[in-house]
Image (cartoon, rainbow, N blue to C red):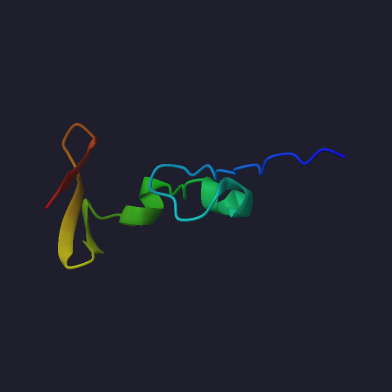
Amino acid sequence: MSQDPPVRRTLLRRPGARRPFAAASKAALAPLELDSSALFQGAREVHIRHKDMTYRLSITRLEKLLLTK
């Protein structure tokens, strides 16, 4: 019986992912999708806090979304 050399296994990861694909759940791979009407609830602007920064997401006159610091 011949002895095979050890196999080196490399885990594949998505850019920025902390877990390998095999361990990631399907829910973690799919982005969260929200309808803008649910997010804005009738307002034209919402504030989003991320870490120590507050961002402003607003609807423009042309009905586009604008994200600013």
